[in-house]
Image 1 (cartoon, one colour):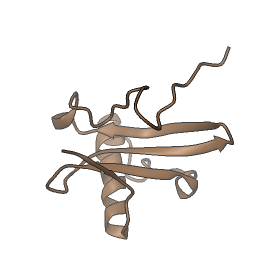
Image 2 (tube, rainbow, N blue to C red):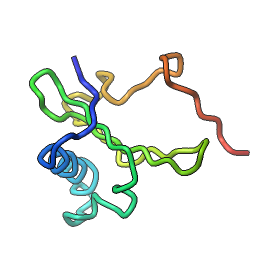
Image 3 (cartoon, helix red, strand yellow):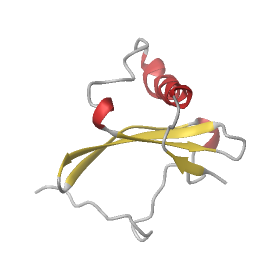
Length: 102
């Protein structure tokens, strides 16, 4: 079973950023530090941990406007891909389908 939660401690937040770099930036040969940006301080960060507390997925939600948000820096470890860690069904409570602009 997986647990979705917000990084609570400085150590958890550092693990969150390390995971983000390893999954998203390192494969593109981007330097450490490129996994962070100016919007991080104002964003909502989430991480998924397994039953042993291992970090297996991360994502960031930034509220752009009252009725608009951006999901960025979303990554799922290859060992748990296709197992539901990065998935939300539009019929699940609290999930709304987004419609495209024009």
